[in-house]
Image (tube, rainbow, N blue to C red):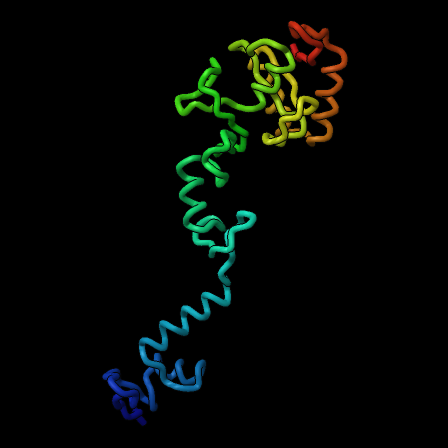
Length: 201
């Protein structure tokens, strides 16, 4: 026997159904216990999204604003996009998008177009008491690009040595690679002019 087709009993719905409600409003009754208006459906969807992804505060210490993008409030997000750091714009020290600490120094010969130079270069130059040459690269032993203590830095020359060591890191554990690097530093003749800095040749 063919079932009777009739209009959905929900107010304003013109869909045809074999039962009391169309499939959409039948789901409303099953999930919410009643038929929701469009406004109520949107509000319910927002509430469900909020439960899955609850709002969070800005990740910057001391900021109580709500985070919008990248766990940052709009003010700190704009500061990050424009200047590479969420810190105060007048400190002269910031973190770039590659994770390196940058220092403001227009007088430095290796400064970029924005007036910043990498802090680890400055630290190594201070130890050597001279500027770095074009074929010298500073490497962070523990892999932390923001750790610019002189004990964590080593000089590679020529740059190909630095690249080869990073390729070695890809196929070996960091502990093994660091051990090899420290052995290289202790066995090589130190050629740093004006100091006794480790120079890997």
